[in-house]
Image (cartoon, rainbow, N blue to C red; front, side):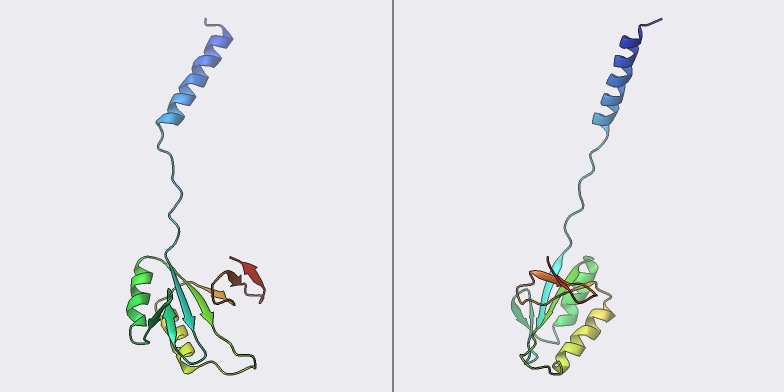
Length: 122
């Protein structure tokens, strides 16, 4: 019979060899993000570039295929006002493509507004 120390070392060596032979799991890639902003005048930008309402569905379809997420910002004036009609059209397009949306209160998308209305750094 082998001494306990040799048996323990053999078991430890076998476990180490099994662990190094296993493929290492890599973290999933970060999600694809589309930064979408609606200005008070109804103009739309995606990732900083002017985008027409007609071109937006193709971008959203592509993003949905990539399982991406939308960072959404809507410019609000100093006085409470109704959003431009394009804002509602954009929201409907987001719902149609079933995209997850993260709302930001800052035009640089550096924060995230949670459902309770609080802003947190992104």
